[in-house]
Image (cartoon, rainbow, N blue to C red):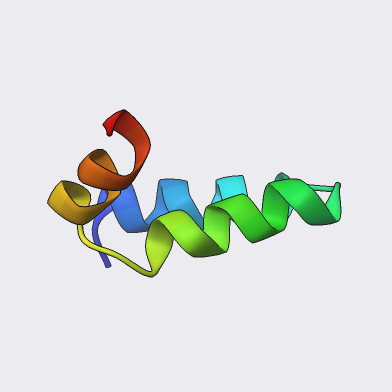
Length: 41
């Protein structure tokens, strides 16, 4: 497991509001370029 994967797992576990968890799930469901297009456009 990579360091970034550990960081993601730890960060996800600390999210409390359902909206924060939903945003994290959405961000993780797409690759970085797709996420960037959705957020910046």
